[in-house]
Image (cartoon, one colour):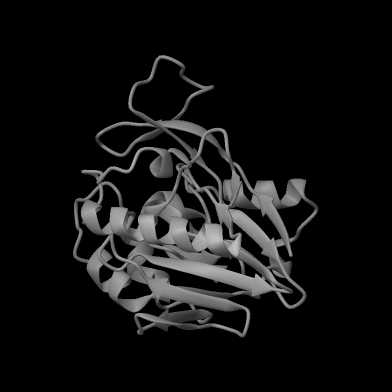
Length: 240
C-alpha cells in the first residue's frame, strides 16, 4: 500500500469554528490544527480518507489541488471514506453550482454513516456543520449510507462506528499484504492524544473516545498499525 498525506495547511480554529490559516494571520488565536486528508492506494483502489475543508466553497476544493500536486486526477479516486460530517472533513466532497451540489469525485463510491447524517441534519445553527451541503449530500448518486455498527466495504476495508467525537463517528482499517492502516479521524487526530490520555470537552462523548484510543493503542502496537493523523501539525503518520 501507498499512503499520501494531502495537507491543506495549519489553521487556528476559534470558538465559532472559523478556520484561519496560520500563515495568513499569525496573530489569530484558537486551537491549532492541521487539515490533512489521506490518499491510500492499494492494488484495487485509490481511496480518500475524508476530504478536507473548503472555506470559500471553491469549484476546485483544496484537496483537489493537493491531488493535482501528486499527479492524481479526481476521476482516479474509486472510494471516499467519510468519518463524520464536520465541515473540515466533508467540504471537499463537492461544490455548488446554481445551488446544486456537484460531486468532486464522480467515479468514486462515497461511504458515510446514515445515523451520522441523520444527527448532523438536526444541528441547525451549529457552526461545525455546513447545512446546505448536508441537505444534498445523500442525493448524490454515488453515496452509500452505512447502517451497521461495523462491517466490511471490501475484503481489504473494514469500518466501525466508534462514537466519541460525534455520536456516530466511524473509523476505518485497510489491510493488504500483511500491512494495516488505521484511520481514527477525530477520535485519534494527533499523536499527543496518546501521550496525554484525556477526555476532551469538545467531543460529544470524550470518555468513550478516550476508551477507544486506549484500546486502539494496545491493538495497534501488537499488530504494528500505521495510523493516519488528520489534525497533527507535525506528524502525519504514526507507525506503531
